[in-house]
Length: 266
Image (cartoon, rainbow, N blue to C red; front, side):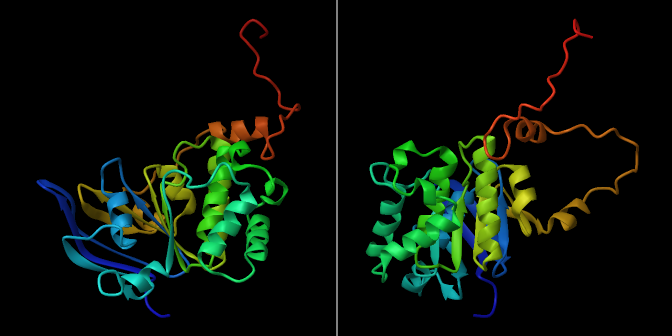
């Protein structure tokens, strides 16, 4: 299909006297990652609920995968998957059973093969037979996103996908989101974390007081500020780099890390 995967024009939504959205406009290109950035209460989740037909807008128009959210709601629902702020997985079932269940509910052929393929794609094969209650936060979130991909939807909404996750789990989710876009899936990501939008997004829109106040690539947004002055600065490692160097990407403690010396040792 041609045209943007998501198109929003003049979206408005109020709850009695509270105006949450005041004319929101943006577009998301197919196969890209679009980050909707804003603080708590900015209206990010409201936008996602409207686009996913869970909520009706007071005014404005929007389309998902070329289908109008008002007049073609059923086609819209077949075009996307939604992953909310908290993992919607059944903890009593195993990871594989969760995926098979979703495939069966969607009346897909060979649910077992679909589940095995997604488990492999999301590096969950070794934990496939374990109950989800034994999974770490990052594993649960990866399973949650995998469940959203059953049926290969062209668009996926990720509403603050790293809420409550530790640093390692956040990085796991970031890697998963990059993989999705690399395979052609369009991702609309809502977040309040600046570094998350900076790491993942092809385009970033900042939602503030119900309006999009800026929309562009990271490079375009940086040009809104005065040109940087070149100065010599000794680069110090970030806390994330220290964390990964000590713990390691695989979770094993690095014994080669040199501990910092105390003032007494100096």
